[in-house]
Amino acid sequence: MSVADIDLSRLRVLVADGGAYSRALTRSSLMALGVKTVAEADGGPQAETLLRAGDADLLIADIDFSGPHGGLELLSAIRGSGAGCRIDLPVIIIAQTDDAAVVTEARRRGVNEFLITPLTAESLFRRIRAVVTAPRPFVQSPVYVGPCRRSVERRIPESAERRINPPPPRPDPLIEAPTGTPRRLAAQAPQPHSSRKRFRAGATIFQEGEAGLEAYIVESGSVLIQKTVGGQPVLLGSVGVAGVFGEMALIDNEPRMASAVAAEDTVCLVMPKAALRGDIRKSPDLVVLVLETLLKNIRGMGHELAEARAGLAAMRQGKTLR
Image (cartoon, rainbow, N blue to C red; front, side):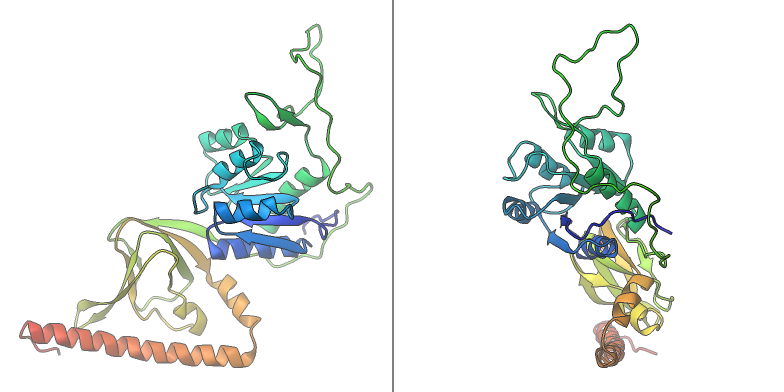
């Protein structure tokens, strides 16, 4: 069970992430924790516009989100007052790596908390709780702007204080931490996680006929969708940045109708079957029926298209398909 001893309903959170699905996952986790107001930005300019409006108490930014600014660049803009918002706005950075150099750079730029994917509601809650109930003193100096990095306030015996100025005052918490025994939420089913996968050019992402366990969103690169006819691959189409593929098998539980191959070095956000099926179950029965009917028709058309293209290619080569 997850400890939830504070009320986050009045907290206003801005989620800055270039991936629509990962934004939705973070938003769902926040709302599951009781946050009522969640704004979303898919790029730096949109994030800065929302921050200038002053409607955020907390920023959660993906380190690599698309646009002129990534998460670290947006963080630097905030700490330099270039984003037109509070210079001490709490910022949580989400990253796919815990590489020491990346963490150090985020700390150097003044991040409050650092969170590694896969994201869970509990890990997100712990970071938020630390930020809103026990904010660190805020430091503004020529070489560093951000939360104080001293974890313990104590003097070393028989040693002079190294700081020239007195320590900055600790700011008031956004939310008061309660005393006594923490309240616990009812146990919830584990939340499906998103992740990123990287494929080299020519790598097979999945094969025709396999069971579908994941769908994919292209973040960079491109993917070829091809079907085998007469023992030869036939191209059905390609999927570029922001395109979705592999979702049909997750919805209708049929085998993969075609294979997916990386046309170049490609990065995809992975959408687990449980996540997609969970969203579909929230839809009205009529919508689900229409969707399944459309997918059945698309599968039929995909097969006919592959047969027609294979036949045309055979005619050009003077061959006959068996």
